[in-house]
Image 1 (cartoon, rainbow, N blue to C red):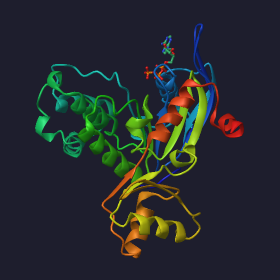
Image 2 (image 1 turned 45 degrees about the vertical axis):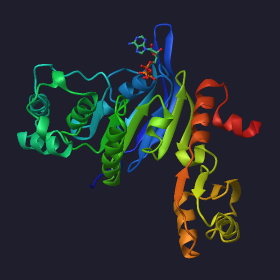
Image 3 (image 1 turned 135 degrees about the horizontal axis):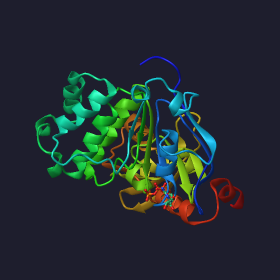
Length: 314
Ligand SMILES: Nc1ncnc2c1ncn2[C@@H]1O[C@H](COP(=O)(O)OP(=O)(O)OP(=O)(O)O)[C@@H](O)[C@H]1O
């Protein structure tokens, strides 16, 4: 994948619908080759912002650009930007293939691309079934296939995890990771951090149309989440981890939980596994605990403080 850098830049974006301010003075950046989670509770302004990025809604003020251009100024925009909105409707009597063929014709893409996408999205077996009977997961896949028709380098997905079961989420995670690894710019919205925590690299958190936090997910949490370790060599492992942290990493804090179980703060699961292996110590389980992040998200979206204010208040 070659060509210009396709970063999304949102600058001082505001949208008012009459007396309702949906988005207020919002600025953030979405980097290429990353999956960015756009997070906020229902009604926070996520859909409105995404619609402004792709020119469906005109901002009251501010700008949104993709690769330095407004959406309307991008030549052949559907080949650059693919967007999926939750409410995307399918004609109930159309099959998945019919649906994609209609969109392919509108975008000037060949029928061979439709067949390719049906395969890529795991819809080949259901290609000729009416969409009326499609499950939520199949609808989400068909939405994604539609957005990918022009092989766009930028993807905006509104609530792509909505209604997916754990297997569907796991599929979505690896599918999006593959697309990001190809150098695409990916923005996905969600009202629940827990839903996309395993998928995203960066986050942009909004509340009542305003930015409350943005940056690396790991940085937002302040430090690596604790890891619960089960090991028959727990006591020796605790000492080993504290005495031999990886180069450049501060000594972790290790809390005994119960016999054979430790909670480690300051190292991630791969670091713990490698140190244990290097010292020939047995590890029977490693679980990264996410409760602190979930709590942080709730705090951010329900309290009046931004991340910076929270930091300086500590
Ligand atoms: N066309 C419109 N006319 C009037 N108000 C609107 C319009 N579109 C959105 N709003 C309002 O703007 C605010 C933000 O809505 P938006 O749909 O962007 O939020 P959201 O974060 O995507 O929420 P959800 O997760 O529920 O979809 C809400 O108060 C909503 O009612």
